[in-house]
Image (cartoon, rainbow, N blue to C red; front, side, top):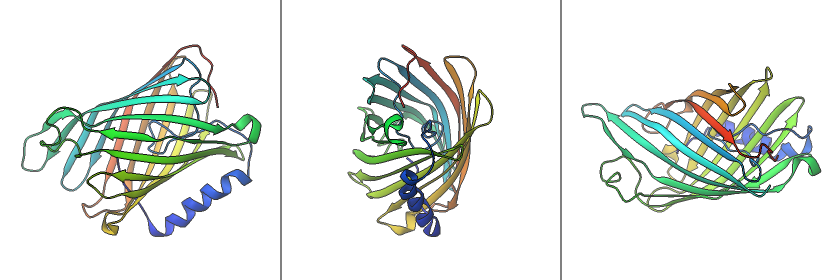
Length: 263
């Protein structure tokens, strides 16, 4: 997970979160892959969403690839969504050979407790647990040791034809720094099959030298009824101790099931 924060940007992000229920009309949420910030939308009972999303994260010390991150989602009823994800990690560092192996696995359950159709905006919580696999990936530096639990709240609404989606939550890290995580995504359909997205995502750990904020832009392009192209790229605008961070993602989203999507 990429951690980020920017001092002046904090007030803008949290103000956006607070103002969401007070403006605009109901809309389809815009968070989720390929963006970092998640949204309140669920995929509908009996539906599957599978994201095959290779990613890259580059810092001063090296580059981490997830080739890909496999993210599997299943709709259980109209308000619940189950999730399992696991990446195959390739780590390169200056002066050493590349290493590869399984990263940490993650499981989560999204519960949408406010609906757009009834209240004009949607809201959910999406608790998720990340844990080590029974491999030597931690010893080889491919995965963080221990468990991490993320407890967020997501909210989404449309304002003058632009979809706005915010998320804020607390990350509990067994052996690392606990932190506040937050993000704001805006998106707009530019054609029947193309969405353009912009995002600011940040983090505030106890060690303030590790604060970071990343600005990210992306797009979803509908290729067929069941396949969507996912693409994004971004860079830190507040750098952690390890220097600037550059991120990128390019992959596919597969959707199939009974065809009914709940928002």
